[in-house]
Amino acid sequence: MIPIKDNIPTRTIPIITVGLIIVNILIFLWQTIALHGTAGDAVYRYYGLIPREFATAITTRWDLLPYNVLTVFTSMFLHGGFIHLGGNMLYLWIFGNNIEDALGHMRFIFFYLLSGVVAAAFQFFYDPASSVPMIGASGAISGVLGAYLVLYPHARIKTILIIIIFIKIVELPAILLLTLWFFVQLLYSHMEGVAWYAHIGGFIFGLVTVKLLVRKKRRT
Image (cartoon, rainbow, N blue to C red; front, side, top):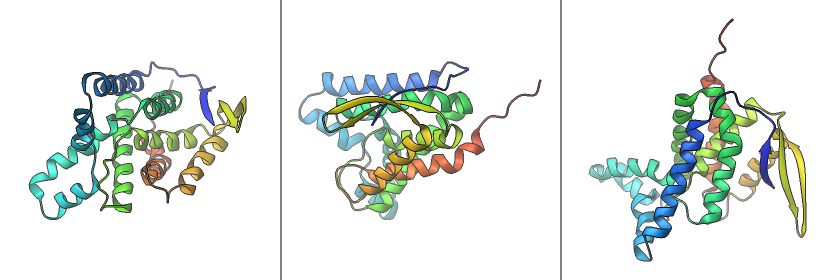
């Protein structure tokens, strides 16, 4: 299922959502055009979050803690390929603009980054011994998806539905699409190669916290 559009209009220009998309794209272009071979691979190890190194920093090498904390944030802006980037930015654009509209610009960037931090924590506690760099915006975007499910459960999402060789565009209620998305993360959480628990953690964080950040409507 590939979402392509929702039916919830926004009242404000989603400058933070657009800004995040632009920054992610520019960093990806820098990775792929300016860096080659081992230099490109080194970016993942230097700016990605490596659980084993983070665990070492918080237990025995406190001098490395500031650098490892920084990687929690830098890792959110790295992607492993065009499909990885494109999928994340598609979800961010479709669902992020409405959450930014509901929270306001400053609260949204705070919520987005904190979702990424919580997502990283979930994955870290699941496998603190991993030496594979964690990269990607999907943990933070998962928080956005959880928030969307709470605020707009009855929104209609135009979705490309792919079943083997059959492709059809359908409209699905957000509560169905996002609930299915979450259960897919749970279903595949035992598999390697994707930080599934980051997705799960970010989504849960968005579910339980977004109502605390929604800006109050002004009285007229």
